[in-house]
Length: 361
Length: 140
Image (cartoon, rainbow over the protein chains, first blue to last red):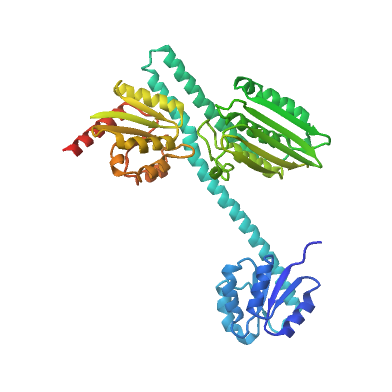
């Protein structure tokens, strides 16, 4: 059953409050207040109140003034004024200024009140959907701005480098120098390639639906071992995978692999070149419908003041290696899709540990 | 007048190109490369006061870098002792044609020119000529 609509009624006459509550408490959850401070307390305690009824004639403050006052502090609830016909002049202005959704004449007719509540409820929901959509739009625009800025630098940067190198090549006669430059050009192109691939990941995470299937983590461990064997061997980084799966786990393999690959490639990439015993350790444990992933490295670590920003789009906390600024943002988006969450612990020059948990679907 | 160079950029290839272009202008020029703006700033702080009066340093500064970007570098640089600042002739480099970058860069007094990447030999020669002329005018 749907939750009852929460309604606040403010009136200085206790009889009216009691009568109102008695008439409507079966269908709605009614809060009553005998004065403005009491009403404020209720609004503070119950932010999910959807509709406020208020009597116009109260000592100290009129209903119109009360609504005017709470319009900015409690903008969400729909405001309905209860008033006698004699007050009508003072009410028209308030309605026109948009402070009041409806008014109900006193003494009220239950049918009028119910119809007002139902209309107000619809209005409330339309408004809140609009507010949510607006917020989503605002975020999308902000991200688009960031995107335009990043694209012009992260895509044009490597291209400008390649163009510059071609210019320079016209005056290089030494074969070794030429080879050195070709190596650097290749590095720039690889960076550009990574950026474009991550951009594709970014897009597919924002769109697309989940495709659920059973996941075998021993199989994943074998694949990951193969993928990272080369970098592990050539950079002399020990790679250990621990798997403990004794129950089935359902999820979408695509975002799951994206999370694992981003965390692992970071763990390999951001190693401390001077550390003797370089290691990356991955643990995947399925227990009571939860997947726990831990990726632990002996790398350069993340400075405390950067740690809150590493999940932001286009944020790069290191210049040691070329990052696209997408990786951890994509991890966060993937986790949002899978209802998972992530925490990070890092000590500078000692290493970083990411802990992820994801529920089975 | 003695002239040397500092290049601040996070990309290997851009360092390579900058060095080539500078050597193209004159093989004798000394080039100090920095991959992080912070280490360039530390260097300038410690070495800036020791520079001889007839020496000037042309700084090629990339704007778009992780951790400390070009703007953050300039904020810190412009807070340094004016005597130190006057030794450095800063040229900002950008790979974008973003008006936002152009506008933002214009507020920094220490930036004498804004060039777009890739750095071209003729642009660099023109900047070097301009710098020498300006410095000689200052001497008079």
